[in-house]
Image (cartoon, rainbow over all chains, first blue to last red; front, side, top):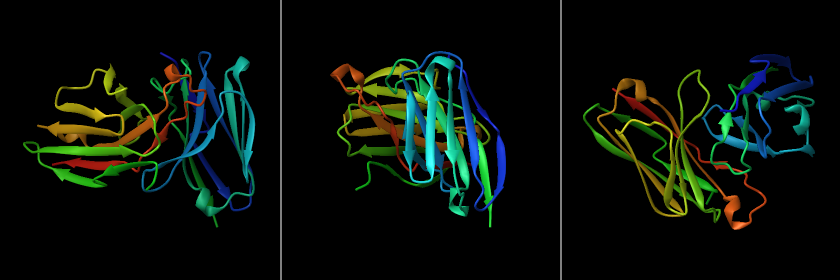
Length: 110
Length: 117
């Protein structure tokens, strides 16, 4: 099956700093999503981005499908950004075989 | 109502008990999923239902039994579980592209944190 690697596994920042999270995948995909898992376990949708660039407030994401990677940018980080960020991909374009990476644990210090 | 709701949020059960997890989606989707998230592990897909038909079963032990009575509801029946089954169980839904949908984004519920004692 498809392999998904996220880096870095852990990231500690001061409030106000910027960061870049990376997701590499081993095969072409037609569905790519970024999620933020809050301390209570819920997965919050950040981006649905099989290709191209999107922005939502302080967050933006870019997927370069031909080179099999996606980047999540967090600017001016806040303590509420802390949590685990997951990338998930599906080669088929559906969500039937959504494969998750191991996540990046982000800690933003006040 | 939020998009995907799961009940209960927390569950503690003995190894001889029988319990059920419930999931309901209000997004008009036609596919629903169960995932398991164990500590320090990525999410693992357990079951996939499309138009109420089970289409995937990723080698899940028979002590986990899914049920999908309609496209909005999904259950996971649990019996004779083991302590290693303690985990966060997440339900998700999406629109399958078979109906011409172009956006197949999956949405997740809040999860049920299960502890088997």
